[in-house]
Length: 170
Figure 1 (cartoon, one colour):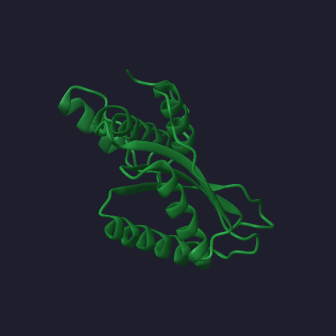
Figure 2 (cartoon, rainbow, N blue to C red):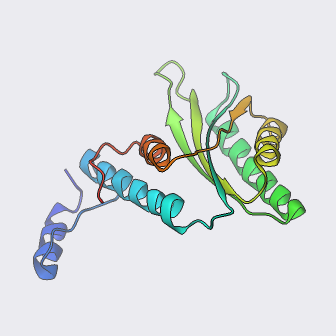
């Protein structure tokens, strides 16, 4: 149950509509609300607000099997810095959204990969090369970056990336 369920009821009555808590740390229901909101925001960004010359990509970034949690933090931080440098060098836009996808078990808690959503105005081959080489340069194991070509694919990939299990709001 939400940590602030009573407060949400009071605010909902004052506002005249049901207030949904979206703090992912409070409860499973709050976490699901947060994922649904994140999915909605990303779908609007990728489907309505990107200029025509910008292409959208999805992907997967993995680390070596024995990576520790500190390795994940350091490598992701370095990776985002590296992408920022490459974007400045090419005078281009490279925006990345990473979501940690935990695939491990109790024996290997740091076993996870990152689901990548990306958009850029660079040519497809240049962007793919930048994303892959930057990831390998900072210590990542492998990276895949296919382009998202249809609106249906964007919706499906964004729902998967955000782990949104609720019905889509239209």
